[in-house]
Image 1 (cartoon, rainbow, N blue to C red):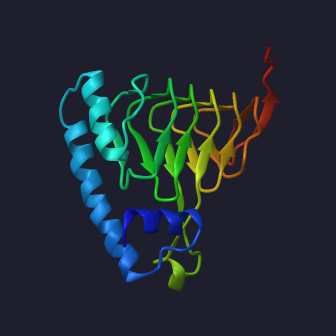
Image 2 (cartoon, one colour):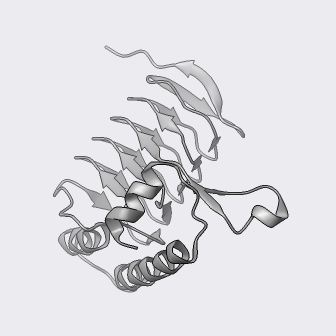
Image 3 (cartoon, rainbow, N blue to C red):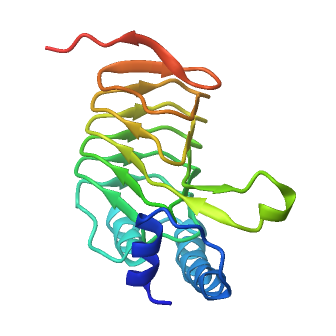
Length: 189
C-alpha cells in the first residue's frame, strides 16, 4: 500500500478492511507518533512548530498557521490547512478520511476531528469507514467540541463549546448541543 493508493481508497469512502490497509495504517501511525512525540515533549518556537507540522503533514504549512501544542494525530497525511488558522492546545485529528480547515479557522482547546466510524454489529467493528470533515473559511469551533465523519461546516459558522457535530452546519450559523443543531443565524455584512 502506498500513501497515494490509501488516499484514493479513503477518498472513495471505501472501508478499511484488509491486512494491507491495516499494516499501512500501523506504519503511518508509528511515523506520526514519532513526530507528535517530538512536537509535544518540549517547548518549540512557532517556526519550529510549523516545521514539525510540515514534516507530519507532508507539505510546507503556511507561515500564518499557529498551533499551541500538544497536538495529536494518528496519521497526519490527510490534513489540509488554509491561511491564518489557529489551533489551540490538546486537539485530536483522526485524519484518515481527511480533515480540511479553510482560511481563518479558529479551533478551541481539546477539539476532536473523527473521520472514521466502526461497523455497529460486533462482527463488523474491526472495519472502519472513512469520510472527510471540511470546515469552510472563518469557522470557529469552541473548546471540547467533537466533529464526526462526513461533516461539512459552512463559512463563518460557529460551533459551540462541547457540541457534537453529526450533520452539516450551514454557513453563517451558530450550532450547539449534543447532537449539534442550528441555534441562530449570524448577521454578516
